[in-house]
Image 1 (cartoon, helix red, strand yellow):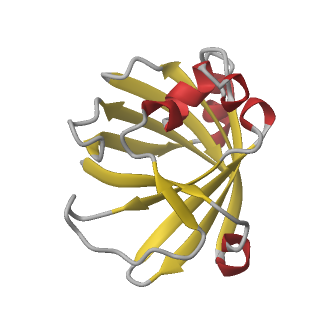
Image 2 (cartoon, rainbow, N blue to C red):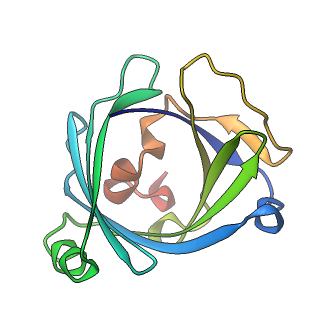
Image 3 (cartoon, helix red, strand yellow):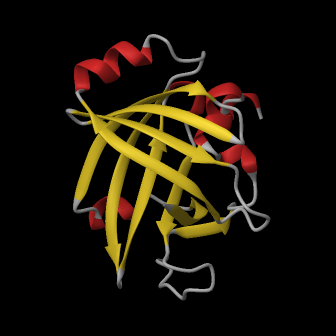
Length: 155
């Protein structure tokens, strides 16, 4: 239940041609406290409830628990969420042995595009595509919970 993830800015839209999947996502936070975020997400026609713990010192690892819930329940829970619902399209791109998830944000986070890759260990090597830019793993501003309360347009 430990998620190991690295985040990067994206420098071009070349990833779109490489994507094997894309889905619109709406997500909100019942709790955006860094020690225990509780997220509600609608991804395509499915609902999810996710709980994440605080990140470790490197910013790469943290506890994550996620379960699928009925999409109607997710819609109701989104109404209870804190202000700042995240709206984005997620593109999935296979590079080498990994899948990059590239999120293109809308609304108050318009113009922000972030790529994430999940790893088996913090020291695992992975291929970096040409459109991958600066690493922002340690920068908490790029956490979705932070973007819901302090959107990109305010930076």
